[in-house]
Length: 169
Ligand code: ADP
Image (cartoon, rainbow, N blue to C red; front, side, top):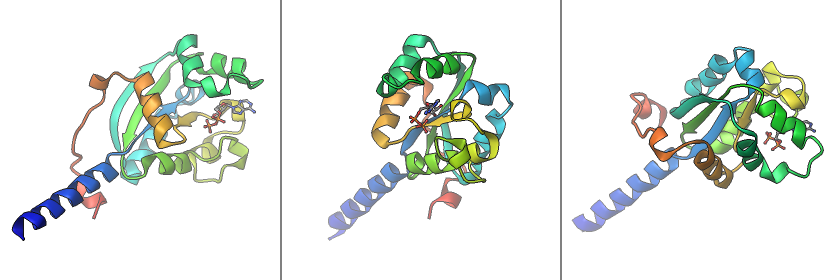
């Protein structure tokens, strides 16, 4: 009986850890960096209770961006998008927490800032779809791919936030 109980407890623990360690790739785009929006964007994810696992400032190469946006390569705005994203430093980040991929998209707002509700990042800070200040992965699968493209494993920190037990029940 005791062993069953311990096993059930351990399984619950594992499930809890898995649920709270989902990761997403968030980037402040060159316009966001130039406009001094790194701080406000980080603040929104921090204040929500998500945990920063990796961060760096990088000016991505054309090849890197073509890989990152390969699904959009046939779009008419693709060349402009690659030029925009490579025009200066990008603040690349990995954020972690329960449902962070979907919730991160909600924090960002819609692709077109004019369709984004006030209170979202794009709805508060942007107007043009081609200058929408931030990126966020759109699914758990693409998050994994994007994190692997932008970060080496050793650049990603695994740590327990002091706030953890006050954020999760
Ligand atoms: P999201 O970034 O919200 O996931 P998409 O993957 O559809 O959106 O597009 C990637 C990026 O390409 C957008 O964030 C935006 O910067 C740019 N983009 C999308 N549609 C257009 C467009 N019609 N004109 C110019 N740029 C666009």
